[in-house]
Image (cartoon, rainbow over all chains, first blue to last red; front, side, top):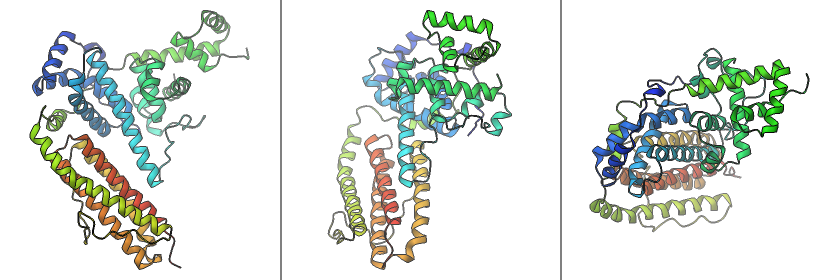
Amino acid sequence: MATVLPLTLPRSSIGANAGSDASLTARAQRGEADAFEELYKAHSGRVHALCLRLTADPAKARELTQDVFVRAWEALPEFRGDANITTWLHRIAVNAMLMQRRSERRRNARVALADDEADDLGTIAEGSSPPMDVATAIDLERAVAALPPGVRRAFVLHDVEGYSHEEIARMTGLAAGTLRAQLHRARQLLIRTLSL
Amino acid sequence: MTDHLSFETLCDLADGACTPAAESAARTHMHACDECASRMSAISALAASTSSLPQSIAPPADLWDDIRKELTPRHSFTRRRAWAWDVRRLVAAAVVIAVASSALTALILRERPTELAGIDPPLPTAPVVVEAGRLPARLASEENAYAESVKTLQRALDVRRDSLAPSTVATVERSLRIADFAIAEARDALAQDPANRALAALFASNYERKIDLLRRATELAPRT
C-alpha cells in the first residue's frame, strides 16, 4: 500500500527545548493535563512522522500516535528523566507498533486467511516490478511507504531515525544479522524504485 | 572486472562499518570499476535523500481532543472502586465463555458436551447484540478488524450449517451467544473506563475467543 504522506515541517524547523521539557514533564507527572498538552504540541510532529513511516497508513498512524501519548501519560509517573523525552516517546511508539503488528498477526493466523509472512524479507521478488503508483512517483516517502513492513521498519529506524543495529535488535527482538539483511534489502528496493 | 563488490560490502562502506583494510581494498576496487562506483553513488544518493526527509509531520488537528478524552485523572479512587465492582461480572463472563469453548471442543471430539446450565451469570437465551458505541479510537479500530474476521468466519459457518446435526448447530449458536455476551460485558465496562488496559485486553481476548469458536465450528464434521 503506497500512501502519500503529508509533509509539513522541514527538518530544520524542529527545535527541542530540554529545560522546558523537564519542567512540563514534572508538571504532567503531577497530573496537569495542560502541561501534557504542551509536551504533545512540542513532540507530536516527530512521533507522528515516525508512526506514519512505520505504518505507511495515515489512519493507523493516527491511532498509533494517539496510543503513544495515552501510554506516555499513563507511564509518566515512572519516567525518571534519565532519557530524553523524545527518545522515550519514540521507544513507546516502536513498542506500540510492534504490539499492534503482533496482535494483527494473531488475528490473521486465527482466521487463516492472510499470509502472515507477507512482510518477510524478499516478499518483493528479485526482478519483479514495484507497485505501479510507486514506480511512477519519484518520491522517497512514497517509496518507503511501499516497502514490505519488515524492511520498512528496519530502514525507518536505522536510516531515518538513526538507531543502531543493536538498539533496533533490542527493541524488535530480531537478530542483528536479520536486521542488517532487511536494511540492505530496503536500500536495494528504494534504489531500484527511485532509479538512483 | 568480474569480481564486483557485494551490495552488503558497499552498504557497510557507506555506513562506516568496514575494517580499515576492507575499506581500503574496496576503494581501490572502485577506482578501477565503474559499475561498483556507480552502485556506491546510488547508495550515497539514497542516504542524502533520506537525511533530507522532514523529522516532523504534523498530526491531524483534532487528534489532541481524542487523546485528552482518554487521559485518566491521576489517583482516581472512585473509578477504581467502580472497576472493582465490575470485575466480578467480567470474570464470570470470561469463565462462561471458557466453558462454552469446552462444549465446542467436546463436540469436535464427539464427547458429551460440557454442561452449560446453572452458570452464574445466567446464560443468554436470545442472540446478544454487540452494539457499536463510544469506544476509544484504537479500540474501535481493533473491533472493526475483529468484526471483519467474525463476518468472514460466520459466512463460512453459514455455508456449512445445513450439513451439521441440529443439536450441533444449537450448541454452536449457544456458544456464540455466550461469546457475544462476554464481549458486550467487556464493552460496557470499557465505555465507562476507556483507558483501562486490563479491560482492553479482556475485550480483545473475548473477541479472539469468539473467533476461535467460529473457526472451530467451521471445522466440525458433518452429520453422519
